[in-house]
Length: 96
Image (cartoon, rainbow, N blue to C red):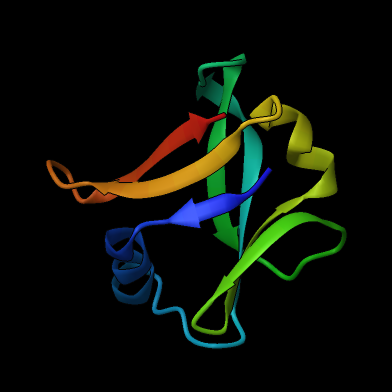
């Protein structure tokens, strides 16, 4: 599994979260909402120091990661992060 971010998503993180080299961004399974694989769970994101990284990608010195305990949520799919331009929010896609 891997994590991919579009250039638009990287710009969103720089603008909205003011990420800079050395920062770590965690994607995690949260209770509430829905996803293509798990009703009642959706994907969340936060700036958080890692404990047990399951998968990560580093871009411009920023680490984007998923903790080992949240890998179940992705059902062996890759995470693709983009921006929905209609509302300027992150958009997640799960790809094989």
